[in-house]
Length: 188
Image 1 (cartoon, one colour):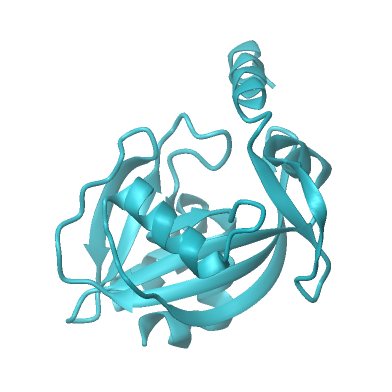
Image 2 (cartoon, rainbow, N blue to C red):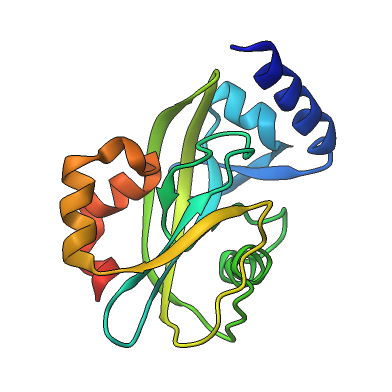
């Protein structure tokens, strides 16, 4: 790991001391909490959320994660990804993070699916998540936070599927998993 990357992770670790994730078992029963970066360093199974927004004509809203994110920076992924806070309902957390990351406020999201995945995301970090994935149709403005999102685009599902096949390294580990197993649920 480069000295710059190590310093960034140390800074993020210090800032995230109070940011905790909910540790869960494989049935999504809460087992306790842990500092977010510690959970990713140790590969502990924890609760997460994702949002997949579609336009009325069926395109998917994709974001490119900001390069300075503590992992998976610069790759494309679904509209929004994060973790519920301890005691926070996953859908409420998904609506909160959708507003914070993408500037989109929705009163309701539809549950699409739940899944568990484990992936090495580099720099000694492991994503091991029980993910609640939500969706909705959106036809309004998009105003992402540049500290979270480097770029965004509405993408035709056929073109996206083809690019995923040709260039899987351009996409987050979790989005590749969703596309592989739950494609029909995401594209509606």
